[in-house]
Image 1: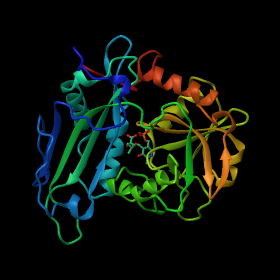
Image 2: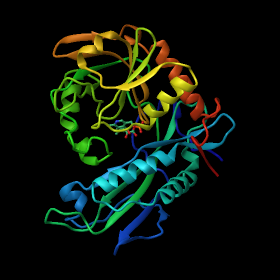
Image 3: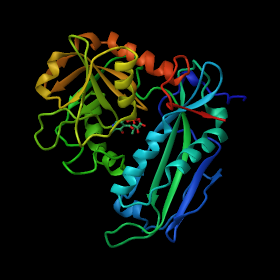
Length: 341
Ligand code: PLP
Ligand code: COI
């Protein structure tokens, strides 16, 4: 497969349209077969459910070129299942999970020339998404939906690459108790735009959100879960019903325990405990694991000693093992790697 002539090493996290995308439509109570198209635009009613009442959800995953030249996707079954959860919560019809994986595979295959070469530092980001396309004016679910998958080659999510991030404890909430924080709804990201613009204007890289009910517990950022390392090398991650169940975080917890023999714990983490951790990282498909150097709580700095300026040693081991599995350098647990043929 001849690759496109792209400066892979200098890609940021942006949208670069690729040749083909997958489109399927839900009409009269059923999904059609769906097909690949070259048309990157969408024509819809001014009254479409997505435009009026934000009825939309999405997924994020990546395709990699392995050391031996195969194209693989990481755990697409978990993205399919999570999208089904998002759809159920938003009163949208589930796109069958096996069909979701097939659509992702077809789209990646059709854009294989854009899957960055092994060792380039870039990957092909895959964005499956669904939205209400039928008109609604009373507040109710749409009758018609569209499911699409597009791909775009990306580099690191955070500019500055390896440098540790500085976060701000946000005064805004990301998700309400019993709300939609645990699904990947577009609306969760719309409400995070004002807080992130404000954080950036103040010189921060990201927000740390607290739980909305008590504002004492650590939740997540706008686009990634947290991992912390304790002084004695244990990996701790927040447990909360209002954060997105990150596939990267769940995979890292498994890798920490089963590959690295580390102790792991998923539990409530209080803001007051932050000074006790020596490393902090943000984990997600886009973020992979990005090191956090400090969190600023209304002017008070909390510094993570071992990740103050760059990725800490424990986080680095986790990073190397996970990316080694994704790039085919380290044997993966059964079912984690889906090969595109
Ligand atoms: N949390 C939020 C709010 C996200 O948007 C994402 C990105 O998908 C994550 C966490 C990380 O999830 P995953 O590892 O499944 O990409
Ligand atoms: C991802 O990691 O896939 C995300 O969706 C995070 C962000 C780009 C929204």
